[in-house]
Image 1: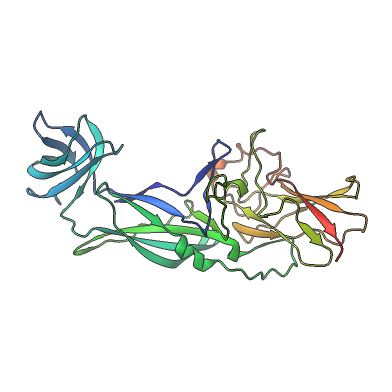
Image 2: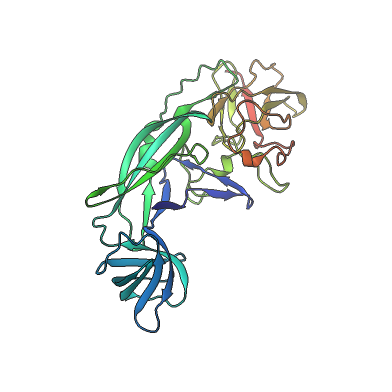
Length: 359
């Protein structure tokens, strides 16, 4: 069996909010584990032997060499099978030791030239009606501890582009060249055996953006500071727009948009764009809002401004807010969030102030 033991994700705001969004121009790594058989390991007397129970034993023969590993990776070693009795296997140790009773697993050295194939899948569509398409396949060989690192970023880069095809005729628009969803599947292979690939889940997806991070950025190559969540503690930092400018400039009459991540964490909930216009003295002229349309799905959306501002307007504060509550169809991707956990208050995007200049 191949299992993922480490995902390219980060916990945001030291709470339960977890970001699974990563910058595609950095490595996006999964750590996977080869685990042929789960066992319960135990030292066998005081001799250099190891005894364990394994089910089934039909693939193990006397004389086989096994590699054993505890779940905490503290103890490991190899041994030659000397006795098989029911589901009990006894090995004479070749390397390593096992000091205490530990849960763990064994891998069969008889599976010669063992390697893992990883398929990387792009994902399109709405939750409940997703389409998968193959981006590529990689081959990885695990270490003697059964560990392998799989970097999928190379395959995902084929999905991004730098051409802006937004027609600027709707309030917000999903731009698939700026990011998207993906998934992975694995198969076990060795000499004389080609394994079937694991299944794909619609609820355990991963995400990427067409971006790069700076050295020592918070969360490293993960986009956690830009990923919106439904709820925040009072002291938490809200998500940011995908802009390198703290105060971008909007030129009247020219195309302009702000990009943001519409994440799986807020999928299905209603959000609005708010604009607070101000004059040259910073005095508020008006606050307006418009409900966003997320029927295009999860991903990176481009957001338009109201435009056609009066000549007296010099700055515009822009933010997104979930205070209207309610849901849109279809239902949220993670039903475990539930409506009982939904807090109907607070902004989820850091306010961005725009300077309004005439061309």
